[in-house]
Amino acid sequence: MLHLNLTERPTIKTVKCVHTKAEKYLVENVLKEGKKYDVKNESEDYYFVIDESGKMGGFYKDYFEEVSN
Image (cartoon, rainbow, N blue to C red):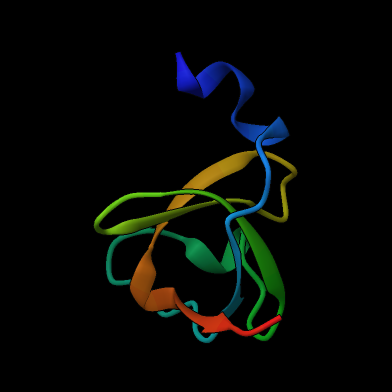
């Protein structure tokens, strides 16, 4: 039951939001362009980050670029 403690998991990597131009969803309400986010989990198509609402969200990887620490 990974979803129960996802917010407390260690950070895998850091990514930076490069755009919020979504075709279908209102991503600009929960992500800010240029802001760095800590990735808590990753799948083939999504990064799971804590967004601007303070909740965990899964977002397509094309909204982000990886940042070297």
